[in-house]
Amino acid sequence: MAKTNFQYEKRQRELEKKKKAEEKARRKQEAKLHKGEEGTAAPEEDSGVVAEREQDTA
Image (cartoon, rainbow, N blue to C red):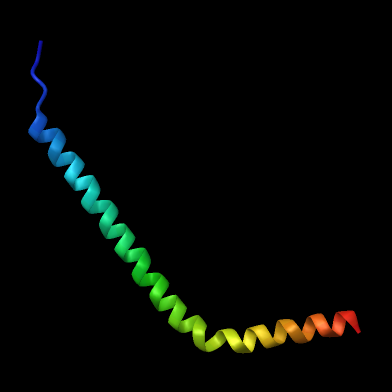
C-alpha cells in the first residue's frame, strides 16, 4: 500500500486558501470601486424612480 503524501495535500490546501483569499480581496476591491461610482450616480437615479412612482399613483 502506498503512503499518503501529507506535504502535497497540505500544499494543495494552502494554495486553495490563498486562491480564496485573493478572490475575496478582488471582490472587495471591485465592490469598493463600484460603491464609489454608484455613490455619485445613485441620487440621480433614485430621484427618477421616485418621480416615476409618483406619476403612476397620480
